[in-house]
Image (cartoon, rainbow, N blue to C red; front, side, top):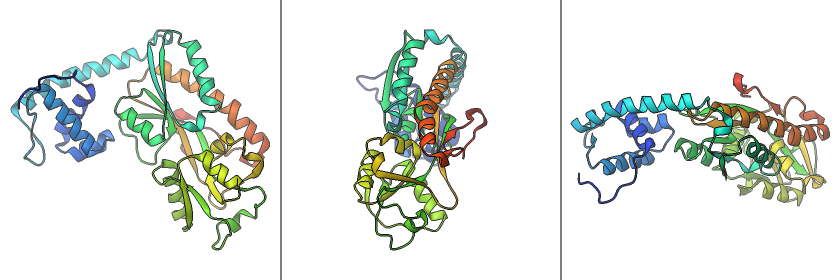
Length: 331
């Protein structure tokens, strides 16, 4: 294999993927453990081989087999990777004031009140730190964490294992039904065939949509719908206009302040279900930073979201609440 005329710096993620491929002998299995697609694993591996200018695997063999040079390279990098992980773990106990860079990803659900509060607090506690705030869907945040493009994410915990990432549950956010305020029959009528208003749902590629669909299947419901949307605000506007009804959560409902006078929130009938908002991090994220972000996030959620909404909607008490992240309190 010829060495390319120009090459970028060696990428740590390439080395981690190579190590997984060498251990599993399979692109698919390595991707499963790393939480990456097969194509992404293949791209990382090809980038590493192009950078080195050597073939590390005999790609004609299944399962994958290391070349002689691949064996030597694996032996040498395993020592280096262990040292890097050890150094990251030791550095994570460092002084908070010395932190220099933090890449934080959040879902848009928190943009109105919680993230501004958190951003101001962190800028005061970490005066020499450069911050990057990135807003995306939960799925995109998790992918960026796995690719080490973010250090910490605040997102909906997916139903499957996070594998190489760590999470601290923060908020239990129950699913509720939202109807137009002037069309609010008993909620049991809403789920029956023939209800006059159509079901408006989240885009099917979102984690929240998959959670809702899974619950509807569990209770034997198949709801016809004529509208999908990735924006909670748009769904709330449509419901407020009388165009239909939807299933959402109190956290999302709390963002739709301008539409709330024309909306009615009701508990989901029968067996209730919820999503969990979590702090999700790479294994080497500083513990002092993580603890600081978590403490302020919990304060902001309780002050700006939970207390006001529970005060106006008492039946949410004990459902819409902070959870014990250390105990893994997943609903």
